[in-house]
Amino acid sequence: MTDDSLENCGLDTLATHAGSRRSPERENSEPVFLTSSFCFDSAAHAAAVFAGEADGNVYSRFTNPTVRAFEERLAALEGGEACLATASGMSAILTLVMGLLKSGDHVVCSRSVFGTTTGLLQSMARFGIETTFVAGADPAAWAAAVTPRTRLLFLETPSNPLTELVDIAAVAAIAHAQADCLLAVDNCFCTPALQRPLALGADIIIHSATKYLDGQGRCVGGALVGPAKLIREKFFPFLRAAGPSMSPFNAWVFLKGLETLSLRMRAHSASAGALAEWLQAQPAVSRVHYPGLTSHPQHVLARRQQTGFGGIVSFEVEGGRQAAWQVIDRVRLFAITGNLGDTRSIITHPASTTHGRLSAEDRMNAGIVEGLVRLSVGLEEVEDLRRDLATALAPFQTRA
Image 1: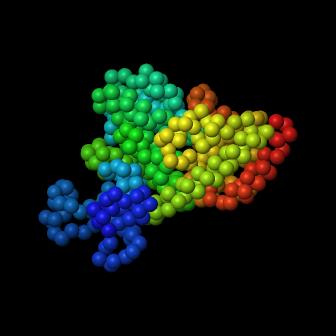
Image 2: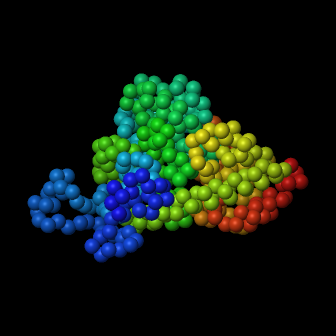
Image 3: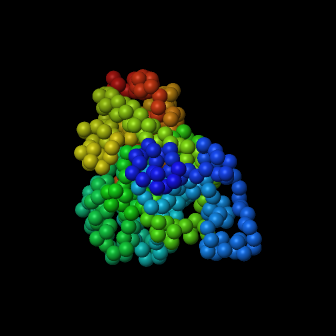
């Protein structure tokens, strides 16, 4: 199917057709090009392709047809001009930083981001790149933190693990009021099935493809989506030189995962919403974080900039870490692991796992309390998940 035939097609059609090009074998499902290198017709042809004077694949560290198919499909879903696939979500953020920034530059980042993202940005200080962390939900805090040296604003929305939202359009306006400043949005929790940040003014989208883009916890990968010129001139040279490359097999897994993305995200959202409502009524639960609840402080914003509320629910139990661990240890259907976005439901204690390397002060500033439990709600029967959580919470219900 040609790119022209996909013009004006909807998300689910793009998810099943964008990026597909049949080989001479006429296959219906995309092939996997498991090869490290590619051959040329002649020495002159090889020289032209290596020099960029002729089209062609060179080496799978930076050119591979399967990876390119995934890149083109994800770019189409996000409404972006181009995409660069990377080895992991964190390598995508590293590529963003190394491609855009230099010593003396400044970053403004929401406090409510993945713990390793915080650690990576803090580590850039030794290279002369400073980061100011702000309350993501407060546009005035973003505006106050911007300086003439600011080159990048970075946010997650919804955030990990508190599902805090950031007004993308408002922060984009702040970024673009500053010369040479860009807004990057981590769209991991919503994916393009529920949120399209570029349409709201963002310049770059970050993905951990490991999560919902795969959807079954099989492979690790990441991606950057944005303007073709930016991808080509800023990010691709870093990937080509440093090699944080996505493997062709992983790209094929992600490519197939995208075909069911919209269906899965709607199902995750429905089950997560039902569990969030139920958790909110439990005596042992002091607070539930989920944008689909009317009690969420940014519920109205979620309804405005998202088409669904996602599959992540976090809740707080009285009794701190000990109580949270006891709840986690009592579940049977929820897997205890640090991943999210799987068909199987997952339960995590952020303060001791995903955000465990942060200082106690940084965790406190980010709202990661010891009694916090994060759920990644899978595709099981929601009543079975509710019953599993009820058993886990039972010892605490009479104490509350």
